[in-house]
Figure 1 (cartoon, helix red, strand yellow):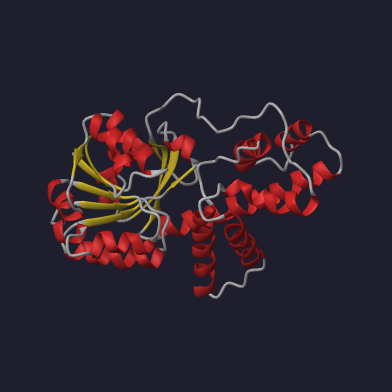
Figure 2: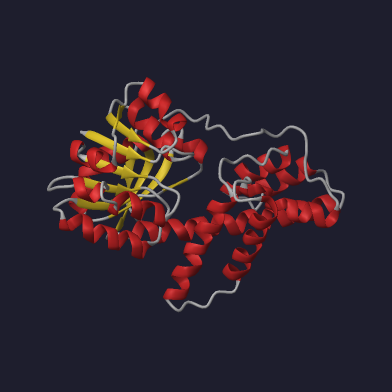
Length: 317
């Protein structure tokens, strides 16, 4: 199976690396030549256009920063759609809008190809080791066709239902993670204001009912001071905006989501779109004059679990 991969950024590059490490024949494409050079040096092929990639590959993966960028890559004159045909599969691994992925999916299916949306969850450090989780939405036969690709990139693979369902769950879980990050920033700043030892505070949260994946990862780089979780402020604003838009389209009245969007938009305006998202805590540090750091925490997260073959997760089991 030959796999084309478009978008070798923070997440995409790690996923493409897992495919190459696991022996797949991979063709890459990215607008940044530095992003693809390690893969080309490692034996991956290069496509001069998305169309050329789609014509020469069995599967085309897109992992791009926004729905608008993906639309351009798919629908341009030399785009992916122009090169798809019967038997091929498009895998959308971007965090995107479920309505947009369904729209593009209908165009993919008109070519005779299949579409699966399969965003990842679990942090960039776990994407690097193939231990990340992957949601996958699409027809069961299309899902099974690309399951070997998915299990090479991720450990836990969940078939979520029809096309678009994975994207709904992805923006929902990213919303939850972002809300948790903000609450942790508030909690850690309040602990500092109360004169608490922050290493002790970290452990108290870790062994308590307030613990979470976000605490065990992002709180550590907050306390280190690097705030480097390999995820930027603009991506948080995009993701929580997608969740908020989804709820509005469904007429679900939300209280917390609009506040979360406002706070992270303010963080983006203050610190810039490419600032690491955990630095949202700077809003509270600046307001209080406190420095919320402690010794003994890592500057970045590294997944030290050994890579394991991925497997499908069955709901209710």
